[in-house]
Image 1 (cartoon, rainbow, N blue to C red):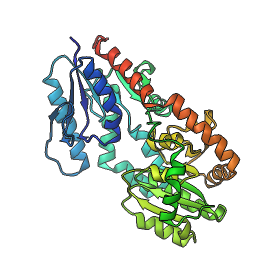
Image 2 (tube, rainbow, N blue to C red; image 1 turned 120 degrees about the horizontal axis):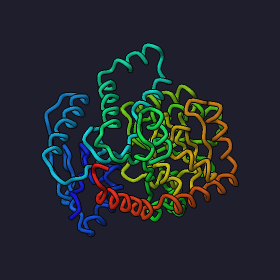
Image 3 (tube, helix red, strand yellow; image 1 turned 180 degrees about the horizontal axis):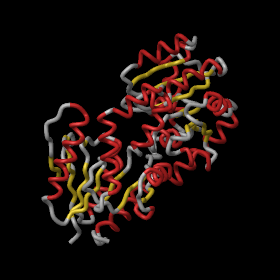
Length: 381
């Protein structure tokens, strides 16, 4: 009899990124007779695997995360014959999926945008101090048996910041649905999306998809736009607390008519369809699904060094890579894809890489192999 496999996620929703990647894997494991359970604070799914709730009261995000960690570990301590995979930084898991990357590295990158006072406040923040301590406890806890990294970048950051044995780290990249995201969308949905936002047919459109505009690099793209040809437009999709700030910035720089902020959208496909280039000069992004979706749509990518997929973009000649805060480097990366022939060639490379290295069946098979190994391994080995 295999041990029960417990997944830990504070707010479980079937539409979340961490949950979507698990769905097909859990279905396959259940067919193989593996007993599954979700441990969470909130349950927003109808049906699905068995679940348990731990929901201690809280005020603020520090208390929220610390309270959940304590309650989850208490619940886990009362169980027997289980393997625990956590998506949260808790010190009582066998497997940790580092889907959010390394908090210490994120703070180092974020500090680059801040002056001395900002860096000091960041260092004194109770929430960041707690999260760094929780991250260290997680990576040094004797129970930890494996860490799933969704990119080589995250693996290397963990090794650089924490005393973790390389043997514990396993890279399993995110997957993308290459049937739902495909180059044909550009013909099917692209023209109507451009008309909706008043974007000329002859424009070269850079699209970016993702919430939290500062982290994703929207500011850098808007500041670069005045130095690109007049037919270059920017289409921004995703949620941000201060979208008006970016609209004002575009107006101040004289490119308001070339910047289109669409806000959050249920379906990103029409926006990939309207694009010529996908741009993601993120300050820090461990392995964005949006980059893979754009690649599956046949779009060449402009990405930052701290975008987890950047090594694939480089090695597969699927776009250009630069430092997130290097204005000249970003302009050069964009300029290199203004030639339609270069876009077509590198877009084909992007689609090929998505199909051959990041398909959903490949990801599912990799996770199934991993879980079978972990469920039958000696928990003390």
